[in-house]
Length: 338
Image 1 (tube, helix red, strand yellow):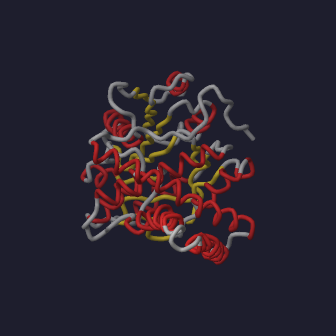
Image 2 (image 1 turned 45 degrees about the vertical axis):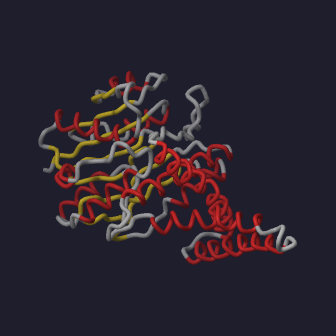
Image 3 (image 1 turned 60 degrees about the vertical axis):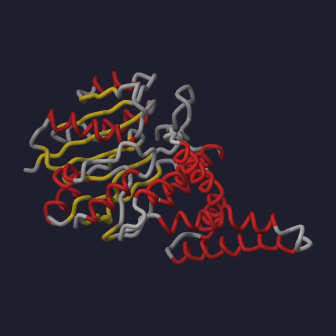
């Protein structure tokens, strides 16, 4: 039997972390939890489950990529024979049967480095923002360009690729996947439930920060791989600039000389929303879900261009970006347990 390990990462996840760890304890050869300066007893909780722990050095900036790499290093010390590693965020619960299904797929497909499945939102009805997350994660099946934070990976190609790029504050999984695909490996999305996620997004401000973080990832990762054959996120970055900055600047900047006629350019946004809505309907979304998704996709262009500007300004000034966190504070109650 192949050896399988789990690396979970988190910061002040509380009840979410308990569900995460309980979903994998006893189902893997080794489990490591990596903590980013939690103040809610997360480390003690992990140790009470018999889970190996890593507490990140506070003097080095936190990133999810760094946490996963350090967790993996501890994992191979605990279990040197490990062949597959499941990475999972501390706000996710691994679905029963997923590890076994994903492991069988990797064993049957020696050309595949990463397998992922369907991440579902635990409380999609709690807020429109949670529901948007659930829609976002319903990606096409089969060979994919990238995975998310939850995925089962083959250890050998992960090590040869150098693991995650620790400097990235977001987008570290797609960036790793593009390096794996360049090396000839494949990424596979299975038709199987993988994890339950608790986004805990109840306010517009949280959604906005998450969208800013996405824009930052588009900018940084596309800049890193500019000029390469697999130009990851180049199209997304251009789209953000066009819809989030160029169109508004043209509409407002030309208003004086066009006697306000340039403001009609804002009429392209309903057309963009309708195009997105129609695409989601073709994918099977119900009307209200498709409408909400289209609306927030358009609004997201403005948040994402803020994230792109944040990255490029920091890059030009030589100031690395810090984490953009959208989750509730440690003092706030965690989501209800069903």
